Image 1 (tube, rainbow, N blue to C red):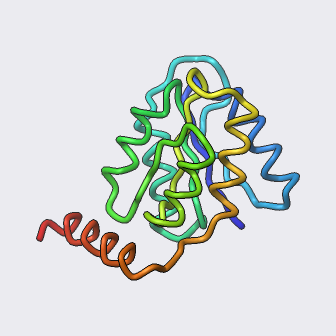
Image 2 (image 1 turned 120 degrees about the vertical axis):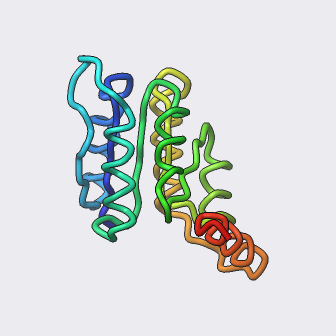
Length: 148
């Protein structure tokens, strides 16, 4: 699987650990995040990840900042993105099964690294359920994006 990953200064340490884990699992990782503690603007990195996902240059995206909140808000402004901020594996599993989320958001200051790794593994390993009620709801989200 090809996964694009982006982050601001508040999560560069987690990005490095999660990239290593993903590569060890055999995934191709596209790094569009910052690589150090110098202050940067998270919207720039969220948008890069979202663009790669909607343009089908990556199968899934992962974004990270201090809390995961701001960066997820930006991603969800991009048409075609369903970004979910997850703090446990149940949320990661359900957002893939029910919402067909295509971007995962994490917070370095709010989630321990081992939990974050478990969340990532769950997110990338869980397929969309294709349940009729879930498809109908995602179609409604798409209609809202279109402004209908």
